[in-house]
Image (tube, rainbow, N blue to C red; front, side, top):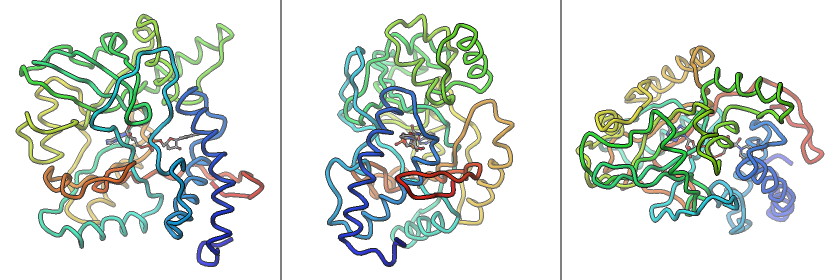
Length: 332
Ligand code: NAD
């Protein structure tokens, strides 16, 4: 039923059919690192649920996937609490939806509004805690409030510094990923050994990082790009782009393909540029992240239970295909 014609009752019923399916796919993806459907299918159904709930906020339930970050943590790894939650990102799939988002921010927060555009790395979120400049804990995002302890594994990833250039206390967040070549080699090896192959580099990275034996992680050649901190107290940066430069000075690997944009046209140019370059990169990206650049403005804009309101992910269109989900034919 088209969104502009659907009644609240019909929307509630549809949402009730969609949610269990999304929850099942979420478990396969986040907890078992083994999705049974492509991301584009998941995104399409998730997007429909978001729109139904936005039209009729009364139908939102607390257990809806739109209100939850990631998946639960039930591996044998120790659990780690995130006092400052690790969030997800809202996403848009078209230039029109993106323009709407940017317009809203420019209208509601006209002062100092500029944007930092970054590549959306296709991996999994990690958090690294340093005390007096020494790495003391590494964890996964998990459900945003409780993640898994992967400290021993992080010590085996060369791009993660064990000592920073300044002896500060800081919690840095970013993406752990597996490069395209490593992914192909790993799957080839697994196939030769008669083992199940990974569906994509993101799942391979997640499966390789969430290991009880750090030697397995070491053997998988993971990399990281860091882009965020839990809080800014000990930093000098006042903008997102400045933060990336400061993280680099501290010893982290950051993705250097970021650019500050002042308006929609500059954002569109950035998107076009990297959409064209996407296949030449040695790591996977599934979109572009556009963030309010001034850090104080990010704080002022704030976040929902699930996503920051000062950032959005523009997802690249997938290859077109027709699929049937929940008895409805979708074009993805
Ligand atoms: P997401 O991966 O779409 O976006 C949020 C994440 O982007 C952040 O948590 C962060 O880890 C990452 N990120 C990468 N580069 C970043 C940057 N420069 N700045 C900030 N963040 C950056 O959100 P999600 O909630 O982790 O997962 C949703 C995704 O997972 C969707 O793409 C969906 O298709 C996929 N998924 C697929 C299935 C399936 O069955 N195929 C199931 C569940 C989820």
